[in-house]
Length: 413
Ligand SMILES: [Zn+2]
Image 1 (cartoon, helix red, strand yellow):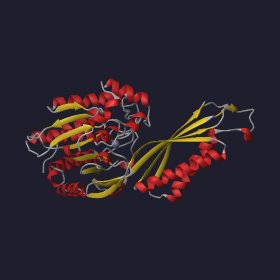
Image 2 (cartoon, helix red, strand yellow):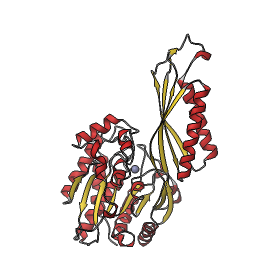
Image 3 (tube, protein in one colour):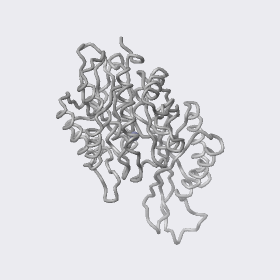
Image 4 (cartoon, protein in one colour):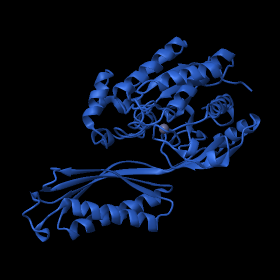
């Protein structure tokens, strides 16, 4: 079986891991931050140096392309993302992008002729600084005007970022590709949980990815003097928001054992020690393995928000900010990954993913698969995120050979 070039892979990974690095070792590359732009510039330069075609599409995705002889063939896409959460780790996303580029280089060096083109893509805004899975869902034709106009993140950052790239938010949707032009999608990623690490298994084969919904819930009351207003006279938005959060947590814990909810941010207005808050904006995200559960949780969330507002004589507004449905990874891709892992002498197991990934966008339009490697202690979205280098190399070799055996699963029209 063909192998990637370990030294080149390591050198590229290390170079990238130095971009956007914080003093304590964390990686800070939120979408369209300086670190993110620098990482993408690095990818562009590497692509050009390696002799591949380089392109930025209208969603800002950075694309390295290696053509096969037949111009009418579809493309097998491999990739991940170079953006990070604030102060995150150096493996999340970056591993998949560097491995994708390494696969292109190995295939080119080997002289193997494939019946499909290959693209290694660094997708824009996977982590959700702005929308989440922005670049991949745009290519898959699953992004809406609404999500661009009403991002869960900062709209100014979105507009400024696209402007800096010489692009416009108004043309993001034109990056959609015809489904028949895409043969398949494969992504290598760290697990970000501890199943593989604890079971001492080198390769995870993703079966499905949970669905994710996010919304902002705003409680509205009245600002008052915090010293002179009696407790019973207050229209205190913080009381409604607090009651909402705790009731919702308990509801999910008790009624939806396979689902999770997170309140990642609460913003108090005007936000001072001595003023009763007139407004609190709560950022909520919830995840579920089944679409039906996402709908049920949405209904429960609305009920809890209204009840919490009513209990404290407040008004409440709920703004749903995008939804990524749960998806199943293609069974043919899964069995190819399994066969490749077996041939390489690697232990593998199937597993669901509780984290969202760009493969979620593609699984809706073409045969898609995901390869996980162990995360030490299951830690991720943290400077402590770590994977052993031998596992990274194993993952890249599984990716390479899964790409080479695309004839087993790709759609060729
Ligand atoms: Zn990721």
